[in-house]
Each structure stands twice: as structure tokens, then as C-alpha cells.
Image 1: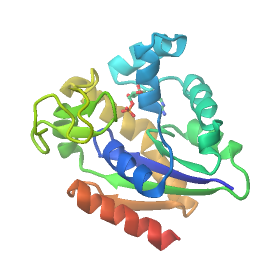
Image 2: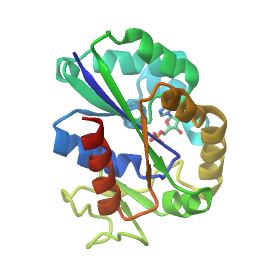
Image 3: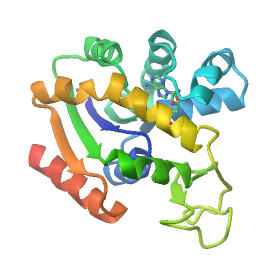
Length: 216
Ligand code: AMP
């Protein structure tokens, strides 16, 4: 039996930040399809080359590419007991493909981070990501103690290529069109808990832990 945790939310809603914390607290591997694509891009693999134009434009990478990459990753031994998904699924066919792979004993919990659209562009556009540990900071809301250096691990902070205001707006549009329907999909199955993602990272983390404790 495996335990799956899915984080749903718009770009910049705080999925990455909370995924790093939850993964440490629960001892579950953190699987981010965005991180997997960025690693493929950096290593100039065929998957990275295929994904690049979609990522740069703020569009979704086609389902079949995402599914092959994700299912290969979660077949690794470290995912046997469960894993935390950040940025997947993002379309109904992805959610259905994931469901098709699960056994009857597998347990799925979906945590939605709700953040109003007005807050999203500012959040994503100031975001800084650590190349080493993946932690996220923000130029304005949580500036690093030393510029360009991750507070958590000392790694190098960088700005994602798709965190410009124009691309963030397109990612938000795509989120509403293709990913937001998953809220109803999982809610109808009784698997969804939503929390207010506009609070501070500590408060959001506490709410997520409380939602998980409630579900047992
Ligand atoms: P993220 O880091 O989750 O914001 O993902 C960055 C980009 O990678 C997205 O804007 C998409 O282009 C691509 N991507 C990541 N996950 C998925 C997914 N599940 N389906 C399609 N495209 C994805």
C-alpha cells in the first residue's frame, strides 16, 4: 500500500515551499514534475529538449511526455511506500492516468492551496529558487540574508525563466483552464482538503498538517 499526497494550486501558490516542508516532516520523497523537467533541460536530454518551448511559453508539456517521465520516477524504490506530488497532475487525463496505476489499497490525499489571482503574479515574479535544495525565497516577502544565497543550505539562488510577469499570467490562465477542474474531480471523490494559501508559510504549513491529521 502506498500513500500519495498531491499538492494542487496555481503557480506561485506555495506548492514548492510547502512540499519541501511536508516531505521533510513526513519522510516522503518530494516529486516535482517541474523540477524533473528543469533537470532534463539542464542535462539537455531529449525530454528536456521537447519540454523547453512549452515551459518557456508558460504552456503545459503534452501529457504523454509528462506521464512517461513521472511514472518512471515513481517506479523507483524510494517511492514504494508513498510520495508527495507537486505540480502533477495538471490535467484531467493526467489525473485519470495516475488513478489507473494505483492499487485498491493505495491512499490518496489532495491538498489544495488557495491564493487569489491578484496575489499570484507578485508572488511568482519575485520568487528565487535554490539550485541545490529547491527551497524557495522571495525578493520582497522573504529576502535571503545574503543576496543570491539560499538561507536553508547556502546554495545559489536563481530566478526561473518562466517567472516573468507575462509568462506567469499565461501559466495562471492555463491553470484555470486545465488544472482547476481537478479541484472538483478530487472533491467529488472525497479526497480534497483546501487551505488558505495566502497566509504566512508557517501558518499554511500548520493548516496542512491539521488537514492531514483530520484525514488520519
Ligand atoms: P512548475 O515548476 O510546477 O511550475 O512547472 C514548470 C513548467 O513545467 C510548467 O509551466 C509546465 O510547462 C511544465 N510542467 C510541470 N509539470 C507539468 C505537468 N504535470 N503537466 C504539464 N506540464 C508540466
